[in-house]
Length: 294
Image (tube, rainbow, N blue to C red):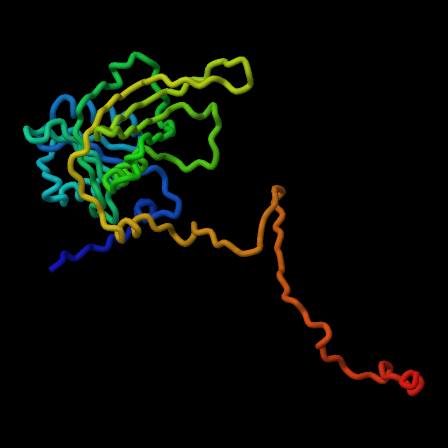
């Protein structure tokens, strides 16, 4: 028998606000992530988790305690951790003889595992290895995906979607050039490597109105290898990506808006048969006897 879920009812005004904040929102903010260690980790894995936390914060939770979890055999402990900390994203670092320097990134949907991808850390250079000024906390990065491999297999497609959810922040309508400060590059090589790079955008003088743009690497620098994956079904992914009805734009035919905000509408009328229109007979329209003779 399935366990009975207890319905939590608020008893105070503050408790009601907390429960309302936990409910699904029409417009959601940045997705939070929980970062934790597995049964055993190496120094490279611990430094990688710390640097990924620095890139993700303040929308991240870093746990110091180790967890005896084999996620590909039983994902229930990870689902419980994400439910406890109210985070739809997770990053788990592990290390073993069979899979050294291992990283698992995944997502949750409705408090259950949606998909996850296992990555092997081939090389690592942390934030401390780059003696350059760091970016401001909470800066929205520009995500760049290089290489045709991101559109060729399902594993790469899901991994790209996970990276977008992981580093995506607030939704913006337009981008100002001076506001673009940070860029994250993900390159999929033909050899099967995934190169993760982080750059700071510098605006230099160019002698004209548009400045010259340079990229300065600020770390971390990571090289990944795709190992295992557990992907969701198409129906479940479609359900997870479904938008609420309030955000759906209903398109109306023959209605347009100009640059000044004025709404214009077009009405299409079919061809009218004027000769066949029935009119009422009037005495004034009758022909007289002289007109008939003439």
